[in-house]
Length: 261
Image (cartoon, rainbow, N blue to C red; front, top):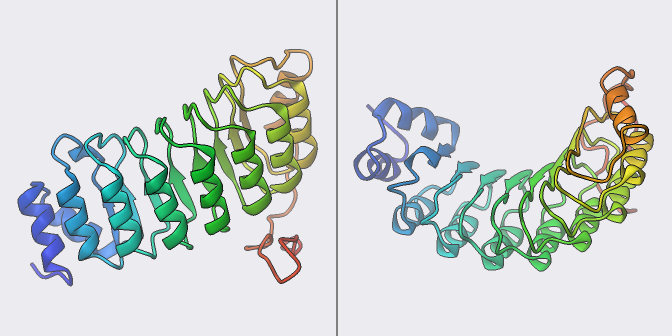
């Protein structure tokens, strides 16, 4: 078998025990799913991969609890073309997220759910550095507040999905800002956000015409108003698709470039 990256091929097959066929598929597509190897993954292994895999665009480290900031920093610095990184339930801190923000401008999707050491300053930096972000999971990030969500809404207008479940510091104000800025939003997770009320759901329903799902159990959303609007989302007609990159900055700030015919 031949591969354009024999060093990473050797790491994956010999150090992790990944099959040769699976490894070749990943290398061909510049992706890596290492979540099923969570029990054997170490910083040294992933750092070695990062140092030899500059073309990597997608990596899944979900549940790899041995991973530290050192790994994520190495990935951010060595694989600057990353578009997707999954770090759910990894024990990382702000330093790792800031490294992504400073190096991976092409990032579109990130999972940080369960990373409870992450704070506002790191995710705000992410919003500033990765304007093309379309999907972010921040569920059960206890230190995240409205400031983070407002920054994402204002700097990443192309957002299509955001998970905030269990983030009890989030209020209606943050969700209303998303509703007013992210017109292409498809779904939002607000379950367990105890400060969320009908006001947030009303704003989302009025402003986000493409919205398909609002998850908001264990909130202050009422059956009579909020849940009624949520039920109507699935049946109401959707407008024509937004033009790709409608939100991109053309020198005057993010603005709608119109709909596709």
